[in-house]
Length: 401
Image (cartoon, rainbow, N blue to C red; front, side, top):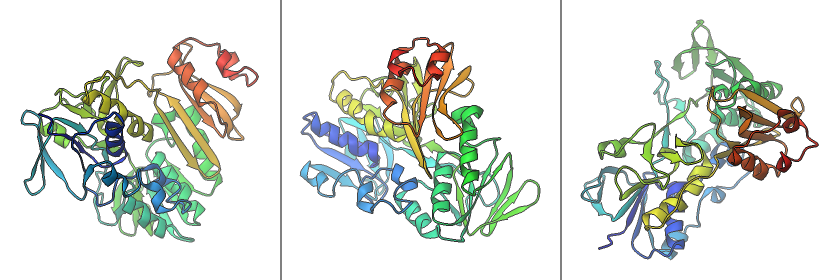
């Protein structure tokens, strides 16, 4: 007997899974459980267009408000799932209610990490993960406000750009020698350091944060950076507590196969929380970006319905900061490449960058150069060795390499 499909996590991945189930012709009960009161929304605008005041609130939502009723998807918002019983096929909600399921999708996402220093969990510390966070920061980013951001990752730098655009005085504190060092490596990370300094950000690298206070940050050298707004963006951690407590295999996220099935055949995972085996790379990878939350649910939905589906899309993400727009396609781990090849005008921030290993393109990034994502993706997927000199030559079309 089909008791329905329950989706825990009412973000982009959860909403797209519900959409995919209906598109695949599934007519059984679909219940979407989320701990936020808001209906499902996308997160990229929270640090980009919506934070900048360029997008209206309605634009962040995955579906119109009436979509769920029209498609007979039950929304249980403002509700926390407290336990999963795979053997008994139930999800327990706060208050003790149990939802039966035939199949379950864990789209539980991730949560901001905190700094393990005094004041690290203070009420005055802001993070940027939820719609309300973005709205609070949007109001706080104003001319003359002293904004201190701890962490020079994507969230920290996008927030810094939004704050500077609003006229705030911005200081970014980063423990590493360069922003985005683990993601991009030193060759490309310098581009973002130069970008933010050119826009007036006080970018302090190689610093140690000792304490967070309501009025600022105390550093390892004893100095204090005063702050009216203190934002911490030091990464996110996958929400795996439900999976762990349920006895599912968890390793840097909820482990799944290429079909997005977990260690229990009736439980699946997608989005930030899923550490999914990727056939192109021959190992599990967990990608904390919008494209996974957007595209994995269709595979999870098909798999839950017993159809053969494999998630093998090349990872992709993007950023917009000031006048710089960037897309990154592929997967290059820290220390996993032996060369970076540039094509174009790096100083003018209009270029392509490629991460290579043994002559093969692991990843490519286009900065203020457009309509090249498809050939970059093909280079990554092909696994063929390329001539670095031809790769660097703008006169050679990418699809002829």
